[in-house]
Image (cartoon, rainbow, N blue to C red):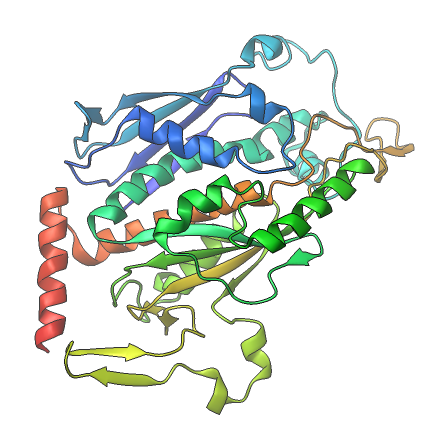
Length: 386
């Protein structure tokens, strides 16, 4: 079973992720992980912190001479701004110099303070911060490397940012990923890209924030990942939970999830055909997003994730209450982005990759990459002969 655990706070000494369940023999380098983390910092509308942070990583365990050992992989991501926060975020006994008592609407501040009996919002926000996704992205780099051994690729692109959105469906291919990452807003369509940039500029001018939507596409996913036999084994359920866990994501749609609800059954489903030459079943449409009954169909797997506007604004106008005095005030402001939708797409890739890698390991097994690939090849051959 593939699983991972992250630790650390946004302005703490650093973040740590431990990934357990990877087979031995998977090639990985610090440079590859750093490259994936650099993608997470992309996007027009990001704040100055993205220029300061360099995501200096260290492979602390589980990798020797560029290959996994089959033991847990531990990765540390140092916080290059730690010297500015050593006093405020010190783990040593003491008291904060500047406690935050004006929780932000739309953030975990107030509910977290109430749940854990805390009086300083920083005790909550430091962990609730989307900075935690840097650790997830490092884990996702390992998952993507494993999926690549099975011929599976995962990419994302922005389909909506504020009021700007793609007018018609676009399905980028794996070879389009560099071009998407070169886009300031990670949009595959140049015309829509300009409209999105204009949206960001308009919001930035008035100190506001923007939400949006990304699409994640997974190609090469074999039939048979996930299962119908238990509610917590369904692939669509696993993907929805994983992507919904990303900070500020408020909706996940698999395939034509929302618009398909307005269709009649005769129009809503992906008809099945037989290719006698290739000796395989296929579908000409992909309304179900590549998943039926909680099981991958072998077709294009795709989903969309909607992100709300960020709760921290450059113009503090959101009404709140000071938890100490109980007086009306406005929420506090820290450095923030106008939007993080392009970066959220990279994190959504991460979560989809981790789920698919985990289900591939569950389906095919193997203590080494070579054994995993052999098992997959045997399964595919059996399907062709059936």
